[in-house]
Image 1 (cartoon, rainbow, N blue to C red):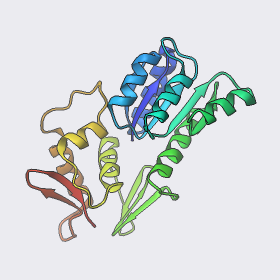
Image 2 (image 1 turned 90 degrees about the horizontal axis):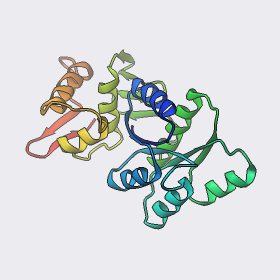
Image 3 (image 1 turned 45 degrees about the horizontal axis):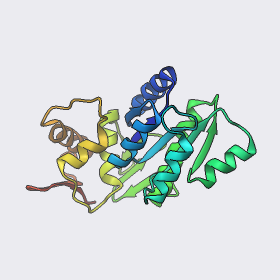
Image 4 (image 1 turned 180 degrees about the horizontal axis):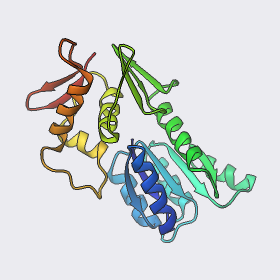
Length: 222
């Protein structure tokens, strides 16, 4: 998943970023409301973690602006304000979920997974595509019942393609989904990752799943 974290606490920003990156997600950061508002408008994120109280621009202001302008990415509002009225205000302003501080990282990650599944109309965390079963919650993959061990980056790449079966994605589109703004991938990084993923998913004698569209990009077709 490509995530945006808008949080003014450097300590929380850092801990969330490290944990979510270890889970295989590409994470961008904004440390104040104005920056977060602009970043949310400039990139297509799978989900956003938005702090309620921010310098520069309040989280509620940002939410209302995004929704009034038609931006529909899932937003998890993160806040120390636990009152019912505050929760109602956040949800009625456009938040998809609400989590109060302090919180367990496992719960935040699970809530983000649920929000993204809802966005892609996927009730089950398992994606069944031909011989593949991809569990987006457990971060596991099986082909014909046999487990396939992938790195976090390879899993992110597979999830990116598998959520859009039949849709050709350019190298630039893939790169924007699996790398954060802080990453500096080599020019052939996507091609190399595709090659490695193909070798693991499609051993000799099995049908290919990831196809090249010359001059256009790559597409998942089971």
